[in-house]
Image (cartoon, rainbow, N blue to C red; front, top):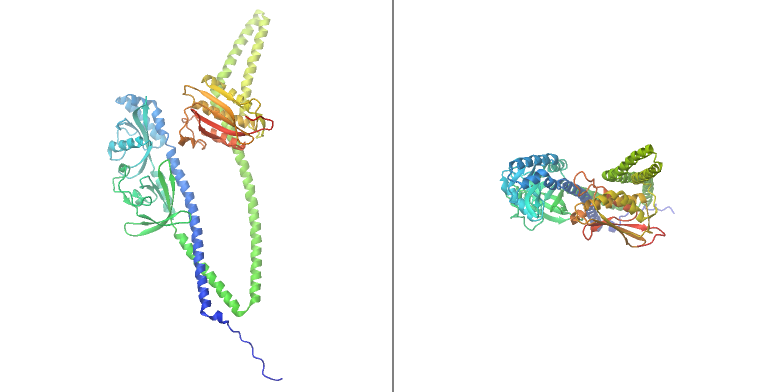
Amino acid sequence: MYGPPPLKRRFVLPRWLGSEFAWLGLTLAVAASMAMAYRWSERIGFEQLDDIANRQLDLYASTLESELGKHAYLPSLIEMDPDIEALFETPDNPTARANAGRKLASFKVRASAITTFALDPAGTLLASSEGYKTLVGDAGPVALPSLLSRTLQAQRSQVFVANAESGASEYYFAQPVRRDAQVVGIVGVKLSLDPLEATWIDLGVRSESEKLLVIDEEGVVIMSSVRQWKYKSVGVYRVEPAVALRYSEQYPRQAIRPLNMAVENVGVRGARQVRITEPDGQYTVHMAQERAIPLLGWHVMILSDPTSVWRNARYAAWGGGAFAAFLGLLALYFWQRRQALRQISFTRNALQEANAQLESKVAQRTGELSLANDELVNEMQERQLAQDELVQAGKLAVLGQMSAGISHEINQPLTALRALAKNTSMLMAAGRMADVDENLKAISEVAERMGSITAQLKSFARKSQGEHQPVPLVSAVHYMLRLLEHRVRAEQVRVELNIPEQMLVYCDLNRLEQVLVNLAGNALDAMQDQAVKVLTISSLPAEGPRVRVRVEDTGVGLPDELLARLFEPFFTTKASGEGLGLGLVISSNIVREFGGTLRVHKGQQGLAFEFDLELAQGGNHV
């Protein structure tokens, strides 16, 4: 009964917990967590780096294409100049050469070019904006014409040539001048790419993690944000770097040495990990991504520095390992101390806190989404308003182009009115009241005709209300023909209509008329110099309850490379000052609002534009 007090139970660490296997398992778990965290962070980092590089590539490539594209039309303008034509007619005339030189200097100043020039078929310099100076450094006037000749023989109108003295990046646009199927000379323009390259170099200095290279079809770096890499051969495109180049005069007079770029690995999205070894043996590692420029035959390559990705991956690995170790030790500690209640309480509190944070984030995100939705609605409304203004501007541009014909149409009735009024006065003085009555009736008819002309203009110029309703397709076509009647009659164009009278389409009549006027006006422009001028407007069957409207001309047509750019904003094949390049863009947007698509393809002789419309209920099919 009064025996010794019971012994307190001592906590005994489980055998498996104190063994070496437990610590080995914890070590493996920490190592696995570090590896997983490293790989995950590295993958996310490279994906972000790839996204940024792709956006930058698009920006650089589009900037380069835009800088060159806005000067591609200059040789054509130079060729059409009267002084240049006179030069090729009498190339030995000193006066013609002097006039051509002054005109070439004017073109140079307006285009911000280095040089504009004219050569004879043999490549001899006839005139330039610089007088009789050489065109390419100290290489003389012989090296460049030979390169231009090969370029033109290869059906190319542009070529890159580095300045032989300074190594500056320069670009040439040239084209042969033909008279009666014979080449009588060559005209061209030389541009400097140094300002664009200087911008890239400045960006490269401010952003050390990004380097840019432009590589030509020979694998030679012709532009770079790193000056010492320029005019080196990039072996990443070939097994061995280029040794013999087809056009060696494109580059400065120096040996083309390899850049020593080697591919070490391929990233998650195809980006390549490359190593660039310098002559002193030092090397740098970059992630290389490239974008091709098919029209130029070049590649734009951007080299991104992966150092920050690997640094963040190491931090993530250490953090993942520390987190795994913490969890392992915490589990051992809680298991050893058997504090299940505290662990449950801690977990519950953590869960409540996470839930509160989640609810707060959900509420915050909901508010942000609501605000973003309101901004999106406002942006859509502003875009619709801007598009309506563009349509109206397009109408006013068409009215301006038709002003000469319209003034002619109104001038005839005005002349008739003046003659009838004077005649009526004389008849009244003579007392011939019956003839006066006839003259007054004629004056009324002429006034009605003038009212009809101004009513058409007023109807065409008004803003559309955007209401879709069943409208007769043939009425819109007849309205378009009335607006363009003076051009059709003056240019002797034969119009062929293949549209049923009873066909109804569901759309906005005013906008449909705008589309037809734009397409028909472009067709008339394309047929100005043709012997046979036929404008065909027809309706064709389409899939479902829709109809295809086809506008075809017998004009000169366009090559395939220009057809793909017809619907780009501000792209036009007309001479400077004759078009803004917005007519087809506006027409395409209007047709898209109708639920259709505006397309272009080559017709039997010229071009054919097609778009589809919804047939209204009660309208007959084709």
